Figure 1 (cartoon, rainbow, N blue to C red):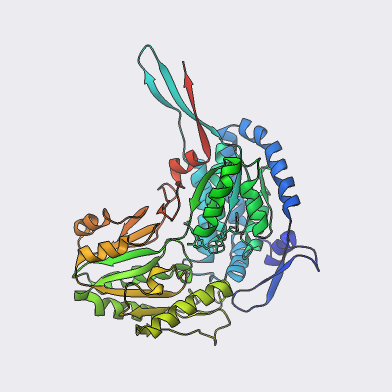
Figure 2: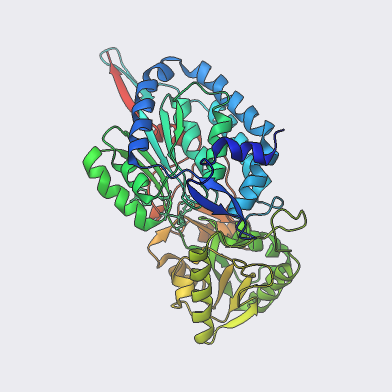
Length: 469
Ligand code: NAD
């Protein structure tokens, strides 16, 4: 194991240059991120283009070996990657946070190595023989967010490498150092120029998406940026996978045992201190169990430690950046002004640091409040009371987003009947947000299009080719 300082020295901009990156919990400067311009991006795309044919020609077996070696390299550096991620992103080492995220990176690399996309015989009737094959798409641009920067980066790049694509990564400007460190670790084992990263501002992201030599864009981020990427794809015809914003609803059905679901409800909403795309962001609870659910959640909130992520006991951390902090603060203040009931939290936890906001459960709130309608992406959960299940389904479906959703009940059958009516890419029963590397994940409506993970994920970074005859 190397030290975090060694890892930082490998990826930081030279002293006196670049952009300072701060520890999200303490505000301390942890390093300087290189601020590359579009010229560096253009050079990276050219190198990735030049390296692609040889990488594809290696074949699946050799690429699988590389991916497995890459997973081992991540494991070998797991602790220092987790520590750097914890400081830059803010998420604690423990709980479903930094160590968990680094573990997911090697797990997804191994899964991308193990899954197979076999050619398919479509017709073989004596007259016609047609087979469907999948070839590398070419050069993939991977543009990521700041909330799960390492794991989402791996989701984008691992299937692409497996299929014989080369990849240029543009990390979020909020969390560049941990992504650059991860790429550097992967490049301990990968051939030169197969995987490149360019750290820079939104102009670099825009150039990557619109670059004439990019064949596919894997994008995870906001719906607003996703729309811009769709526009730029009119120019380069890049294929797109768009994992955009969400505002996932959960419905607790009548009579559900509140204490049985409280822990899973809590983590469904507050994993990564609420900064998760497919987190539970609106909770609809039947009147018969409303008070019990609110109290059971409050009990978990009161006993779950928040603070500096490097302290082993903490499992909730700060917001990653001031912009996100301000969104959460504004939405909670608005809810208060409308007369909603603050059950826990409700104002910044300044005693912990500038960017800390406590777990804020907001009860007795109307469905048209901005805290319900907008994506809060932080530790505040509106809990809406309902009396008619049909009304709850209608409310869950009324927004123009559809990443995930969940139904909570004592009876699985009862929950399944409701689950099938939720407009979302994934609906969980008695849990929310759990992902598996072999199970496809993607949104509907304004939450984006395209699937990641498993065989469907490999297809998304390939082009189909029919061999006829
Ligand atoms: P963002 O859209 O502001 O930025 C994402 C990335 O896009 C950054 O790397 C940024 O530099 C880049 N970018 C900015 N302008 C660009 C342009 N014109 N062209 C190309 N790239 C450009 O998003 P964010 O604030 O980093 O992330 C938060 C959002 O991401 C939330 O809405 C959240 O729901 C969503 N998200 C979705 C998923 C998912 O899987 N669906 C996962 C995580 C986050």
